[in-house]
Length: 263
Image (cartoon, rainbow, N blue to C red; front, side):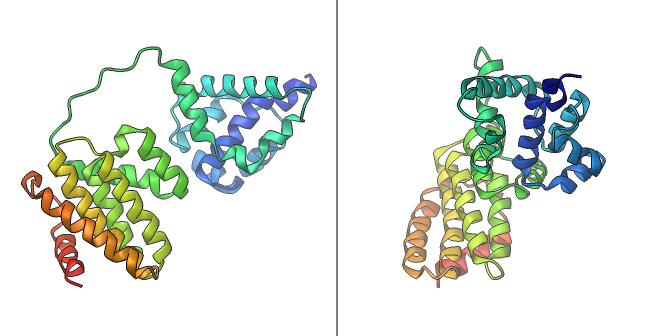
């Protein structure tokens, strides 16, 4: 086996990128992907090539589509070729570069999608959407704040009223124990509300709903003026969207919303 084959730089780096996408240490990746911990360490150090089956297992654990692996590997090869002669390949293992895996995903998408897919018709909101939202939140919850925002900004499936409701609920649950986290989640819920497809009135109602949570989180974070501004905007958006509200938003949260608005 040659030195290049032994180090397997492309598969090795893709393997590490998938681990960093989730913020996992070696043990967590081993557990989630059902790979022996000792093997993960061996692959990380480049002491053995990463088999395609293992790379695909890591991709599945990270919710990364298998069909994007080859474009990602090509992107890594291009990066290494451009850097050749100017820096050691190991330099690309820096935290800053590893944190940009989602950008590599976008590049991979461009490589495999020659024609933009036909946009499906927007489905009316339904209580059944909550089931999908629970699965989406399970995927988002274990990622970093930056990665969560990127998922919403780049992926249509993460833009739904039910996910906005679920993220807002998580913010509400964290507002006392971890105001900073609650604020991040409230901002995320508002972003989802802004990008959710559908009628403008319904989107306005969602933004008012999420905006109230943002106000509460700002107040808990020691920003009373920011909280007042957020609530003033939330009230306007909530009222403007009254005609588009199908009555799906959590009733308990609605009551809390009204109590916050009266504070």
